[in-house]
Length: 178
Image 1 (cartoon, helix red, strand yellow):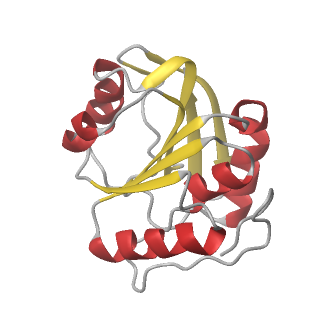
Image 2 (cartoon, rainbow, N blue to C red):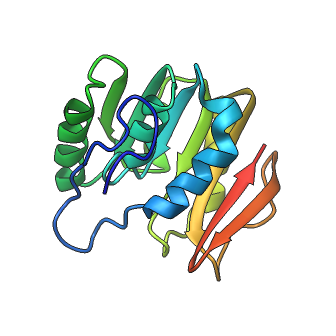
């Protein structure tokens, strides 16, 4: 796995051992950031269920001002911290150990872009997206991207969030909300 573009382009990053982490594939991440490119420069980026931290690190590499990377697995958090250092983003990235959606109240926003990549069996999409709204974690004009299995995407409307785009890549779907 590597950073695709920006100042850390080509930098290899680590992934936790085992099957408990499902990193976003490079081709999906590349498509995601091609879609997000006009929004990334200077943005505050929140990476929920960060796994390797690849999405938050990609955002920083492409010009995001800061990124908060959240996971609840000890192995993932260890790898995320190493990857932050490998990419040279210690000054702009923060790694947090939180269970979601309950841990949202420990975050300080707002964020311009929120990326959520929960396990495909995660049954709390509504609680997560509504929690982002309730805690005012998304900046005005900001967006949320929710990665899911293509066959089980989240609903088109959740709380005040409305789907404005869905992109599918093999078994993966990215749902964009504003």
